[in-house]
Image (cartoon, rainbow over all chains, first blue to last red; front, side, top):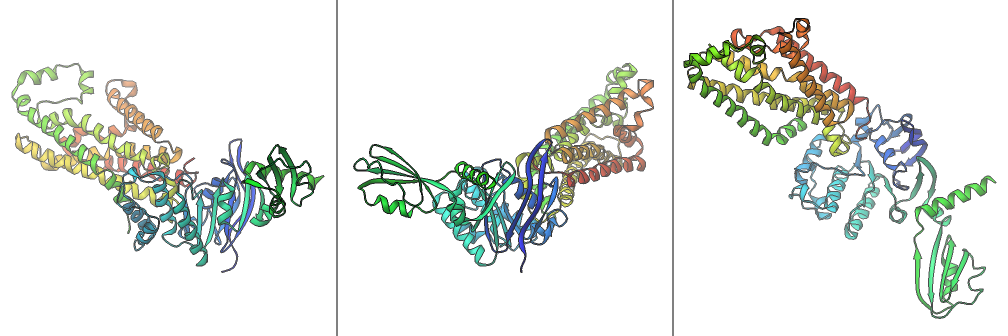
Amino acid sequence: MVGSAITTSALTKRYGRHTALDGVDLEVGRGEVFGLIGPNGAGKTTVMRILVDLLRPTSGSATVLGFDSRRDGVEVRRRVGYLPGELALYEDLTPARHLALLADLRGRPDIDPRPLAERLKLDLHRPIRALSKGNRQKVGLVQAFMHEPELLILDEPTGGLDPLVQHEFSTLLDEARARGATVFLSSHVLSEVERLADRVGLVREGRLVTVDDLGRLKARVTRRLDLHLAAPAPPNAFRGVPGVRSVERDGDRVTLVLTGSADAAVKEAARYDVVALTSREPDLDDIFLELYAGEAADAA
Amino acid sequence: MPLSLTRKTLHDRRRSLAGWSLGLAGLVAVMCAYWPTIRDSSELRSFFQDLPEGLRAIVGDADYGTAAGYLDAELFSFMVPLLLLVVAIGMGARAIAGEEERGTVDLLLSLPVTRRRVVLEKVAGGLLVLSLLGAVLFVSLLVGAAAVDMDVPAGRLAGISLASVLVVLPFGALALAVGCATGRRGGAAGFAATAAVAAFLLETLGSIVPSLDGWRVLSPWNWYASDEVLRSGLALGDVALLVGVAAALAAVAIVAVERRDLGV
């Protein structure tokens, strides 16, 4: 089926004088894995909660899988698996009972959560109140995936998961994509989305700042490379190397600020005796600053 | 399966249901156990009859000369409705606002169910819990009355058991409506409890204070009239008022929750 999985137009949400979302136009294609990134409080959760009709937009609208989020909320939610950002479960139930209740309410009592629980190594028979944060998150993931929804809306899905489970989670995403499902996920950590998403949207203070292909976004972003050399580098080292925007030298330590590919800089570094090399993740604030600088330059 | 939330409400309340059942049965048992002493002691009876009129109105215009009057004064003018009121207001306030406070509303309403259905299923669960308590009350009365040879027909005992469930429905529904409109469980329970106390005072003081007398008909406790139920049976008009007001408030609750952002 063609068309987009999610379309929002001028989506705005205000609480009194506070604007949580400000005219967000977003389009997520079917079969895509789309990551929404932004600092906490940027509006990611607000977008997701509007899509499942927990919140009502102040103005603008959202269409999910061809259905209006407000008018046809039930039809939307039938086709969606949603993982809340702040997952709260019925503490006195076991995961088995909890998942059975949710399956019942979906009108799908036939759903068997056991294969998924097994893959995520979730014990279905301990009371939820006795579970760790990571295990609770697994309950959340199982309930989001168990009915094989057309669209997965996952708010900070990997929070609290250990690396092994994170790996299983990305396998689940691959499988969902393979059967044609769309994934809409959020994170406040770029590196997390990087491994999972095809495209990302950056939100800040309720605005969708940019939507881009991940490769291109990273090409626009700066990162730092710290080099520890066996001997102090000569004063003109790394000058004029493609991608290197600035060089700081402090004895045998060199810090490079790079844009785009690190290839040329690393090859240049190979001329020296390198003791250690660290690449620092660009953090979100750097990216936003970079993007704003870019926009300001474009405007000038 | 249908009514999953109704069954969940029953499951969630199973322990408190057992506790309240024991409490009600115990209360009935103790009051019935005292009846032979009261019946046979003319001094006690005259003591109550000699109380000032205002005080007598507050203790339920107690007529300790008959078993019906005794049951009304000791159980139905205050204690039993109070216990059921706590249960009803607690469930009403918790239905939606409790899900919001705990944050479970996100999962619950990300399912393909309407908010109306969630409210209705929970209302059904609440009604079942109260009906079960009403049944426990009735059976305890039946057993207790037979044990001490009270002269009250079973039909009257059934009537008063039903009436004491019905009188708490408007207040439970009020807690539901406020909870649905605001998402605040504590506020909803507090508001409904205050309303119940105010209505109770209106009814009892109204029988003493002439200027309040005309307003008594507005109080659900006036439609409850436990003494009349025990003496002459349930009045259909009163039943209709209690049920009607509760149903109207439940409808308000649905409209309110359908218009609102949840869990904010």
